[in-house]
Amino acid sequence: MTQISFEFFSPKTITAAFSLSQAADTLAGFAPQFSSVTCSTDPAKTLDTLRALRRTGLGRVHAHVTCATQKPADFPAYLKAAQAAGAEGLIALRGDAAPEGLDVLDLIAGAKHNSMQDIFVAAYPEVHPLAQSTQSDLDWLKRKQDAGATAAITQFFFHADFFLRFRDKAADEGITLPIIPGILPVQNWTATHAMARSCGTSIAADLAEGFARAEREGRAEMMAIAQASELCDGLIQNGVEHLHFYTMNRAEVVSAICTALGKAPKQSLRRVA
Image (tube, rainbow, N blue to C red; front, side, top):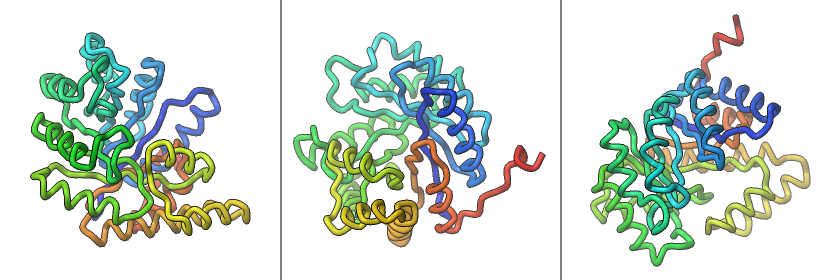
């Protein structure tokens, strides 16, 4: 059975915190292998979110670290604080070329020294906008693996072929660590389109028009569920064993996709108590 995991971010308001709690409670029913919390500009909020999610049954909880903005001297203290808040793993982002920040290889070494169970890194099915080439992306992923990374999670993509080609190229380079595809269900087409442009994610013209039309006609959620379910099914049919969902702190669309893929949610005890 395909494994799943979820990403959440720290809420900024009381209303947003309530929405996160509801989403976490719903998605916990799908028994994810792990869940992750993105790195807030306020580290205290990240730690609070880690503590909250640890109590919801969302599997192991991992903390994101944005290496480019993390001062190397501050990392040991942040690592200890994240572990105290319940983090059993780290997910390192933006550390491939961060001369003034925390080098990703140093992060991996520090996490290993402190017995982190999971040390995940980033990967890009389509060339990272700041990378020199596809080969440089692969070279960095190989360095991360050799340093001790236990898995990689990819940037989101909309066409399975991008991921499958990247996976095969990685294997040709001797990269054997699990590469987990990052799936972003479209919950706001305008925002998603802007995110895709900023990070170099390709969207075929017919798919873009389909999402735009669905939003105009009030079928946005139906379109999002259908597109992501088809994408995930195509990945599973090609041997992918784990899917990582960027939830945007909302459960409805993600829950429907997981159900479409054959994941049966379990009823939360808190709902029937």
